[in-house]
Length: 223
Image (cartoon, rainbow, N blue to C red):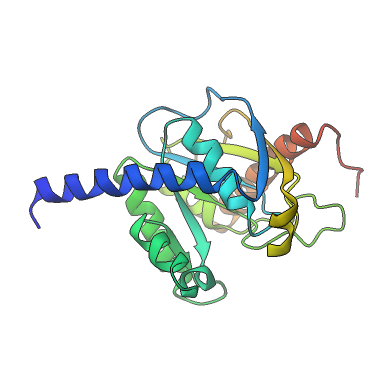
C-alpha cells in the first residue's frame, strides 16, 4: 500500500474512530467538562489521567475528541482479547499493554511511535485501577516519565476525572463523570535516570491529583 493509500486509510479510520468514541462515550456515563487550552489542536501531546474504572476510557476519549484530537490509548491487553472490541481497538490504533511482562516495553515504544508521528497519546500512569479507599490516584509507574524524557518538547497534560464506578455493571447506571485538564506538567530537564524518572513520575501524579480534586470539587484528606 503506497503513501497515498496509507493516508486515505488513516483518514477513514480517524473518521470512524471519532464517531465511535463520540457515540459510545455517551453510553456508560453522563460526561461534563470544559474545553481546555492545554490540549493543543495539532502536534504530539501526552495526556496523563487517573484510573478509576474500566468504562472511564470512553469518557476520556469523548473529552479528547471534543478538542478535535484523536486519542491513542495504552490499554490493558485483556481488552484486545474481547471479541469485536479488540478488533475495533486495533483498527483505531489503540495500544495493548501486557502489564507485568517484558512486552510492556513494546507498548511504550508504540506510544513513542505515535508521538513521533504527531499524534495524541493517553496513558494511565498508575497502570491499574486505583486501589485507594477514597479513590484518589495511586502510585505512578515510570512509563509517562520515560516518554516525557524521550520527547522533552511534547506537552504532558494532566487530566483528572471523577465519578466513574468500577465494574462493567456500573455502565448501566450512567454515572456522572467530570473531567478537568490542567496546564502542562513542568518536568525536570534531565535524562532518563532512575532519580529523574522517579521525580518526574511524582510530579505527574501530583498534577493529576490536583485535577482530580478539582473535578470532584474537594481536596483529599492528608494521608
